[in-house]
Amino acid sequence: MSKELVGALSALEAKGISKEVIVEAIEAALINAYKKNYNQAANVRVDLNLERGTMKLYSRKDVVEEVEDERLQISLADAQRINPNYELGDVVEEEETPRNFGRIAATTAKQIVTQRFREAERGIVYEEYVDRADDIINGVVERLDPRNIYVGIGKIEAVLPQNEQIPGEVYKPHDRIKVYITKVERTSRGPQVFVSRTHPGLLRRLFELEVPEIFEGTVEIKSIAREAGDRSKISVVAHNEEVDPVGSCVGAKGARVQTIVNELHDEKIDIVEWSEDPVVFVANALSPSQVLDVQVNEEEKSTTVVVPDYQLSLAIGKRGQNARLAAKLTGWKIDIKSETDATELGIYPRQEAQTDVYEDIDNESTNAEEVEVDLYKDDEE
Image 1 (tube, one colour):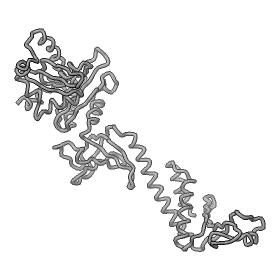
Image 2 (tube, rainbow, N blue to C red):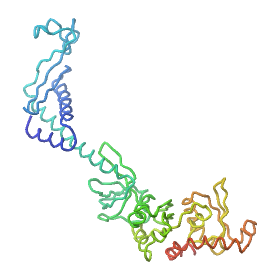
Image 3 (cartoon, helix red, strand yellow):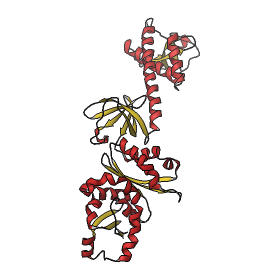
Image 4 (cartoon, helix red, strand yellow):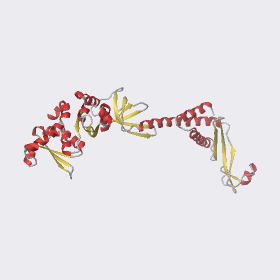
């Protein structure tokens, strides 16, 4: 056995694979190589001595009373001619190392070591990235095909499938993008990392990176509803009464949220304050629309929302998007009625006192509305 092979075994041991495991694998491979190259079906054992750099091959035969297969068995009389101490049931070993077996052994050992090196590298890469699932990572677009984009994220290329790409976003080689790791799998070709640009988790991680209050836990993201590349809603709550959760996420002059908007291909983002009261929460979730009344059906977990006539289209949004996202964000079904329709149906009498109550709800949504007002001109149209 060459010094080069012994050195390779030591290198593998440094990668966390014990030398004993490698030796066992080489011995098993040598046994298979011996049977294949010498057309042998005998029971054999290989003995590798790393310190001396030697290899010996022994045939193994069971001591029996009557021999049925000479390749696997030896009679008690023949065994005792070798050593008088042999008894029935013992195993007789005789060295049968072929003269030219050294070349086969070297080739086989090299193949095993190379294979183990690959497996060790793959194992290290897998362990590195499996713990990063549900996390955000910076990547570089390496190559594209009609279905997938391959993003370099360090030691491996991650796969960005077509259905995880932001609609309308154009990717070019060498573009730097942030991606969200959705899953890490072991495959026959090594570890495979799948990433996304559309997952709601990407939006959550971007806010954690951009807003210190969220990273520190002062402000918590309660829920996210996202239609990637178009519009998203995020609800937040502060665990400190002195902290404005919406303002913290928006940042001075909208700087924080604008950084995230730019990263997500100008995706519109509504930031609203979460409330355990469904009346307040649903009203906030329909931002930037004003809300006059929210009627709750606890049994069906549904709500009927009354909005001013001139804001009905804004509350519903294009193709119902604003209402749909608000429903996803809150977990409540939302049926939106104009003030006129609600009055005609008798579910919203015009009462000044009731109107005053819901003026507070309108005010709670002003932060998000002020920042995003220029983004929703299309909705009003």
